[in-house]
Image 1 (cartoon, one colour):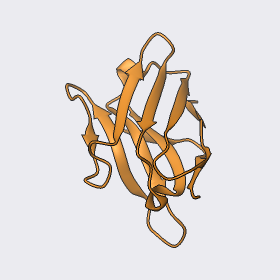
Image 2 (image 1 turned 180 degrees about the horizontal axis):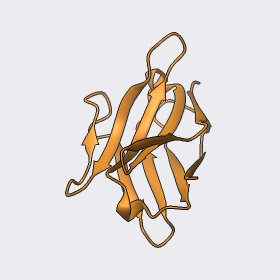
Image 3 (image 1 turned 90 degrees about the horizontal axis):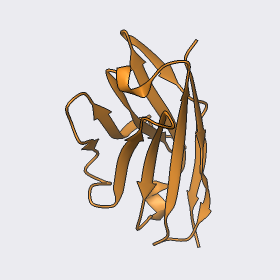
Length: 116
């Protein structure tokens, strides 16, 4: 069974940075059809933040373009989300998602709070 384990969330002041990690267990990230990050703020629907698909350098939500960067490390089988210039509206639970052979897998999420 594929497992996704997120880490790196926390409390940060506006303008600060965080790097989220998603360790993928039991399947190589290179074999995924798509892998990325979603977030869900209280009272809101889960939304796509950034994703890597085969042959792309990354797709981003308009709200995070220029501030967030998604990257994959095949050696460590981990996907990262570098978040810079964080805003209070980035506060949410961030989830890692990966699709292998037509099946979507989700991590349990990591909380990000942007507040002074």
